[in-house]
Image (cartoon, rainbow, N blue to C red):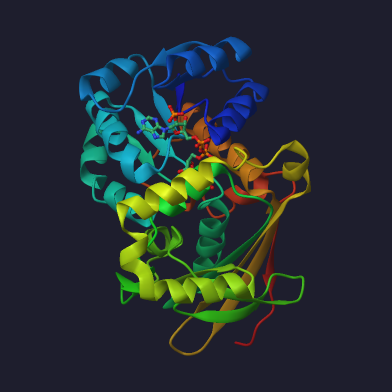
Length: 352
Ligand SMILES: NC(=O)c1ccc[n+]([C@@H]2O[C@H](COP(=O)([O-])OP(=O)(O)OC[C@H]3O[C@@H](n4cnc5c(N)ncnc54)[C@H](OP(=O)(O)O)[C@@H]3O)[C@@H](O)[C@H]2O)c1
């Protein structure tokens, strides 16, 4: 079975390629820029393929002989659909590292087509959403009649340029939560609450994180809110953004913000990745008021992403694909996340 990493020369794509090679894989590396594809192919002595995502026939040709795509080129709202279509057309398993709700939902809508093509479609095999999705699934297994899921994360580290550009592309769209099974739009920073990630209480703020989509597909829990830790000043700014959402969606403002983001470093350097930590907290509650809670500590987000994405690809290469739309926890189980160095998931005692 053969693996193709698309967007292999991006910041995260490079980390994933390096990890894949360390793990003994020989992926084909691909992207739209010939010079950058050839450079990474040469660095790791891999086959390189150059193709963009604008012409369907070119993507299909690019997937010739490939069994699994690990798509790392984002923002995925612009890149996922053409690659997914080519995967369905060519019978190629599709994995990506998105965290974007609309991308998960679009992939979920293609479940029947993916099933009849015999392929697995599993977006979100990076830090978004492997640890949070595994915590969600673990909680729902502990409390099968849960009706509410709250999930929070905190990254003690930097974000990459690509992550920031993806955030800019989604600016002004408000918050999103799931209520009674439906994804609904709410104001930015709609809810705050205090959680303990194991290092004392922190105020977290609701954000439109991928779990609002995936948590439901993984667990069936109909009410989901995802939170992250942000400094108080950032929460205030997020609240103020409610009054200027039209401005944030205005193309010239987005272009300006993108230009500012492009002046930042590509992503955290090696020492920052070594020092960084991610923390996850989750709680599920049923209508009787019973609750279960768990928390997880893990490596820095981009290191985490490289490890989980390559392990997911390896799983599929080993014949472990389940056809149709999958989330990380439906594809690989609630305990998938426990297998990575530096990950510790523990139950938190609560009232019941
Ligand atoms: N799941 C997670 O936890 C996780 C972790 C890390 C990153 N991400 C997401 O992954 C994406 C990449 O992040 P990054 O830090 O690697 O960003 P990056 O360094 O900016 O790399 C982006 C990559 O995507 C390619 N790309 C962008 N638009 C494209 C298009 N229309 N067609 C073909 N290729 C395109 C770029 O190619 P060019 O240079 O040719 O434009 C580049 O290879 C972002 O959306 C980010 O949010 C998710």
